[in-house]
Image (cartoon, rainbow, N blue to C red; front, side, top):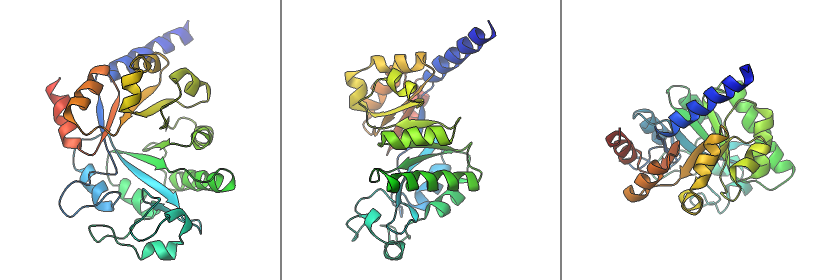
Length: 253
């Protein structure tokens, strides 16, 4: 009976949460003056508005340094994962900032109240991927950010490993081809799919909520699509226009 009540309360909470879509700033809130994607300034700007979280991309350099960069191309560097950190340090972002290391980014993340949506980019399968996962988890734990970081990745294996190594931490898969039940069976409790996947499978939102899972959608920049995803009841919208999304959500209350 106790187990049944807990499950019922969880489903009610998830359903209620689905009626209050929250916003994630994509690569920080970068579309402002003197700013750049995945920069410390973009994170600081996101921390100044009432978003749920700020998404950022993490790659491991050839010599094992975790850096915040979308990749694979980084300005003049063809592939950040094949470059050394010495080479990466020379790069300047569009606003003149250096490419932040993961440690520097998380240090700034500790100063704000928003969640840090950590996208671990796909690395070659095997030891390179295992090392990238291991270093990501070690850094988050070392900085005592387990309650503030949520992981996302296009690598299903990385998601599996992250869910196993950090039980209780939200992990979301990005690729969009796997139904909710199959993800949950792997221990992955979040879908973070492109909006086109939910246009094809709108039933996945309700299915995920019924399973106690969360639903995120990327990268939604047009007002019409924002309204459509809010209407579906997704939990989070990841967007390059966070203030527009916040305004739309506020107008529906």
